[in-house]
Amino acid sequence: MKTKDFYYDLPKELIAQKPLPNRSESRLLVMDRKTGAMTHTVFEELLHYVAPGDCLVMNDTRVIPARLIGKSQNGGRMEFLLLNRKDAHRFEVLVKPGKKARVGSLFDFGEGIIKARILDVTAEGGRLVEFIYDGIFEEILDKLGETPLPPYITEKPEDEKEIRNRYQTVYARQDGSAAAPTAGLHFTWPMLEALSEKGVDVAYITLHVGLGTFRPVKAENILDHRMHAEYFDISPEAADKINRAKKNGGRIIAVGTTSCRTLESAADELGSIQASRGWTDIFIYPGYKFKLIDGLITNFHLPESTLLMLISAFSQREHILAAYEEAVRQRYRFFSFGDCMLIQ
Image (tube, rainbow, N blue to C red):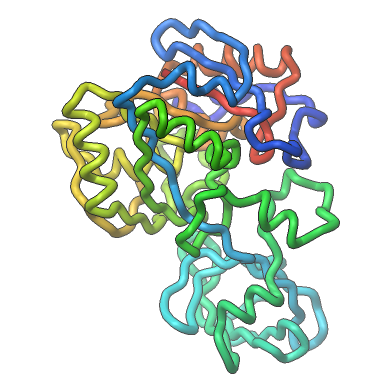
């Protein structure tokens, strides 16, 4: 299957640049995964599409201020995007411009508050770096770092504090992501309480979003693409909730592709899941046989992306592309701060 098979035309003006004032006022396109039938509604109406006994599985990762802007020893600009923490001082990072980030190079952030030395080049073209600092790294990062908004958000936010709050789910609690699990951005605490009152359970799992989620597909044939590993953690409590719901006939609805990938990585062939933690590089594309999930809440994804391939696997590529064409016609808002779909 070719990467170009997952292309669609998107007018630039439909790429959401800012979040809506109210998280749950986003539009919701509900699609039957088998027939492709569509219904247009708003996210607050999600309550009418779930039933007592269903279990929503949410990724509680927390976005860190993972973008650092500094300079080289000769004064040139350097940008780091923190991906995976290896130990107290070493991180895997993306760098820009890469040609200046040679092994042994030293960079300065915050006028000497923290320095970084390039130790190695990773297989994916990133860098392994060692940070040199005094004090607590998280406190330094909180002071110097910026929210790592995706490159298609071209309008720079005026208020870093506000954007740190809005590019974060209300239930985020496990520090470590370089990007938000954006399907969860639509939920509010009142909505979560309403779900609970209806008898819908919520299980929180963790996948720290990194290069595996947003790395573009450059291969012509999708089978030649390799995912970058991301860390996940499924607690015994979460596993018990998911297994109990499945056993009792409830649906398992993944909130976001990161939750979906985590669940499908950890599930066995019988659709059961065990508490576990580790690294996953699962790549889901058409032909994949889902083991656990029955529904998926997801934002609208970039053309030719692994995320578009995943949701095409959960339904059918033709149904998904038709839904995206309809979303364009109906002027839905796309990508991280945009509207979303419920595929069931």
